[in-house]
Image (cartoon, rainbow, N blue to C red; front, side):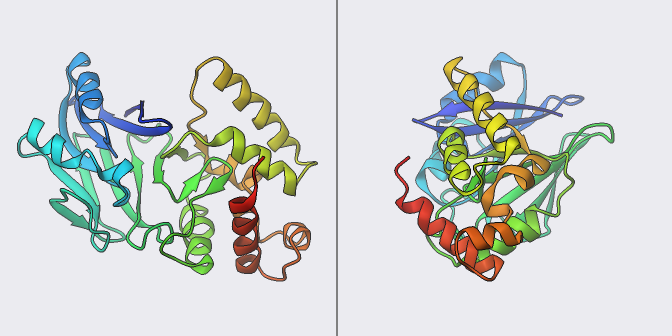
Length: 258
């Protein structure tokens, strides 16, 4: 499978997932449908389905338009998330096929929104899997708790996503990496991996390049929200449990100006 990122709006990413043997494609959060279709047409692909991570307009706002432009297209979204234009509601554990080799597994990752879905995608055996995390997991951070609790975010990040294979490539919904890594260093100033990743991310952005994908392994080593099980992180923020620490770090991040 091939994955193409398509910058949208100010700092959003939409994605194309391509099954190479059949040239069938799925679009993730295609908020600017014309950009998606331009990429589809220029590569001679057939757009079969849309995967929506959650109902916020900057992710689901292109669904109605893409249905007009591609009659009969299937639009997937979380069963309790009230996704605009949704034709096929998915629950945790539901699977969708794309072409000959691509399988998409819906993972319920609530907190940012109650019905938020991350999509875990596998291709041929020799290919690293990928996960599309919308606004649940960002590089070195997580989404705001708009509709949920720290307990839910802990479960979503550290249990559901944290247990995926470490080589899984992480494709998130926004380009926030530089700021997120700067904040991460306020909590772990001596984390060499975070220091290196920040330098790399700054160079990428200066060159006009994206900082995605990350990997689950990278996130476990640099993302403070996925490191709250570590006593040193809990100590740093004056908490005694992972969930408490997660809530406190989110609060600090919300108030941090960089």
